[in-house]
Amino acid sequence: MPIQHRATQTSYYRKNQSLTAKNVLQFISSLIIPLVFGIFTIVITFHQQKTAREQRLEDLNELREDRREEAIRANNANEFQRQLATDRYRDQLLASYIQDMAAVVDKNNGSLTSNQAMSTVTRAKTLAVIRQLDTQRTIKLNMNQSNVGLLDLPTEILLVILKNLTNVDILYSLLNVDNQRLDIIVQGNIFTNTLDFVLKTLTDDNIFLFNDSIIDRFCTNILPRIHQNIKYLILDSLSMERILLAADYPNLTRFKLFNFNNKILSDYFTGKLLTY
Image (cartoon, rainbow, N blue to C red):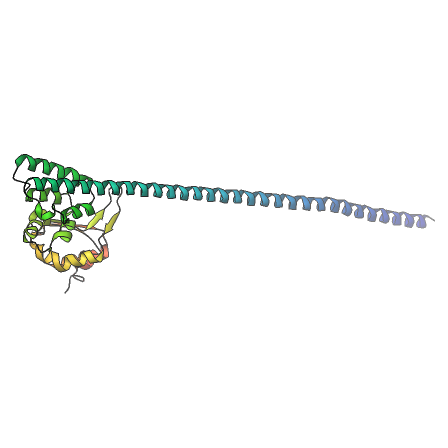
């Protein structure tokens, strides 16, 4: 009897233990599943927030870029309008100057120097106009075929006009125009001692180079005629070889180089480039 009782107790204990383990597993399962769903929900939420934040940043950047481009377009449009207004003003100024000088020449029987007072006024007016014109219009003024063309002006006024241009512009535009007087003037030391083949901006350190056609004409037709007068050359490393090989420069005492390149300069000093 006791043995049967103990067996019954053991069976009951095992049954209770089995029920307890099952309950624990069910309880743990009931906790894990919501926990997993909770973690999954949190991860999804963070991902959605991150995606939304990235989208907002992208939208903001696109908006900023659109505004920047709009500002650039507006600025370009304003600059274009300002340039148009400036061009119109300069065209009117040039036309007015030519008409005034034509009237002066006609009034003084084709001469601007016969009257000292008139010559002084003409010189002052010419200087004032030249300072307001760009290079292209100044050259246009010089080469104008009206009654007040370049060859009608006295040398003093010619020099006033030409000194407001760069030497490279003068030589390229006015040398070899089949006029002996003009050739003598532009080949003088005033316009040939220093030649600057580098265009520099006024607002920053950017430089621009002359195109190949201009350099070719200098090397072929201009430098061989004026090389003895040249004392100072301002060049860039790309066009240096052609210009230096175009002629001898017996009086060259100064030299300035832009776009400095160690390898190119080394090749020059070692004679690798300066060969015929």
